[in-house]
Every structure is written in structure tokens, then in C-alpha cells.
Image 1 (cartoon, rainbow, N blue to C red):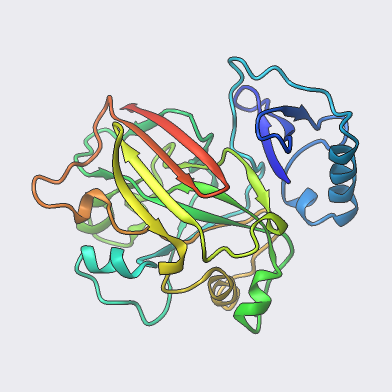
Image 2 (cartoon, one colour; image 1 turned 30 degrees about the vertical axis):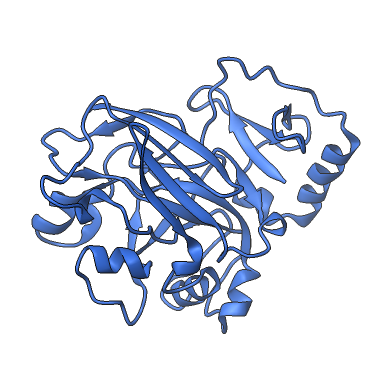
Length: 286
């Protein structure tokens, strides 16, 4: 299934993308929200599937209708840095022996087409298209990468926007450059795991002002999805509704020759992960 949330900020309603890939149907008569509680409730998910099969869900008029982030009440956003061989190479970093982890605050998450704000004083705002993993059941001390996949409820397109000067040059950890307002557009859909049989075979692409900047595949990940879930669960408990951003391929601004084409007000970024939907964000100053 392709689950989404539509409506004004703070007043989104749960919805479902029909099998035709165009029609959006209202789920608010079946479930109250798309969140960790729903993803952990197999009976509720089956009710959604049954309603989808019946074809009787009300159709929503999507003209002018905002698409929000497809997941509400996110507990935490765990991110994996330098998780593609080509990206590590382009920025001159050694291949990590273990996944590099950092956190983004859940309040960085916005809708897939919402405006991204360039922080005040920023000169190195950068783009990163990523495959996001959404956890569906509590994971602690997972024993294997194969088992790790069984904790995944679904997947989404994610944009891990970054401010590189603040991330790298301002002391401390990466968090300063990762947690600015609007720095994690998510969606448009949460695609359930049964529709993504191989998360290591997805194309990921990003464009800036119509120019293709990133064109990679999750097959190039250093640590695959199952291993990432296993690894993270050794250090923190993952709960239903938690999100993991699994890294970005080559093509970020930081890896380009000088002068590096960092994002500015007026730019437009578009990105997609194969089968998970496309995002489009205009940028303006904070």
C-alpha cells in the first residue's frame, strides 16, 4: 500500500493512493492517523487493506491539496552518514568500518513539497536524496541483517538537507548542520514493505533547477537496510514510527569542484526514490 497524509499543516488526514497511482482516497473513516501505532497494529493494517480492496473509500479532490509527511508522531530520525561508496570517495573520506550515526529532530520533518528554508547566515546548504526506512515493531539487539528487514514497516523518499559549514567547521558533532527548520522533507508516500521486495535495488535521483545532480542506486550502500537496522538496534531501541535515513549517493554540492554550487534562495530541488514517489521543494530564506 501507499499511505499518505493530506491537508494543512497540523490538520492532515490519512489517505491512500489507489492502485492506479493517481486517485487519492480518504482513510479517515477507517483509521485516525498514520503513525507508529497503526504500523504496529496488524489488525488495523488489514482493515486498511480490506477497505482498499473493496474500492469504496471516498475519493479526495487533490486540486490544491497539500501533501504532508506520510507519518505522524515520529519518535526519532536516525541517520547514517557516508553510507555509499561513491559518496565517501567524492568527499575524500575513508570507507567507514561501521555505520556513522547521527540524529535529526522529528520537528525537521515536513511535507515533500513544502518550502525548505535556507538558514540565516548559511552559505553551504546542501542536498541529499535518501531512502528512508520506517520501523514497524520494536527492535532491540536484533541478531542479524536478515532479521533486521523484518522490523521494517515501509519505505519513503527522504531529503536530508544539510548545512555543511555548521556540520563540519563549527565544532562539535554533525547535529548543528542537520537540524535546521524544514531540513527533512519526507514522502509523498509511505510504501509498505511488501511492495519493496529488494530495498537494495532502488534508483535514487535528485535535480537542482532541473539539472540532474545525483543518480545512484541503493545497491551501492556500504551497509544495507537490514544491517543498518541490526546495527542501530545495538545502541538504541527502535520503536514503531521511528525513521532511519540510510545515506546518500555521490553528487552532493560538497563533492563538486569549486565554486561549489550550494543551495540558495530561489532554487528548486526535486528528488525521487524508485517506486516511492517524487518531491519538489522551492527554497527561500529563513
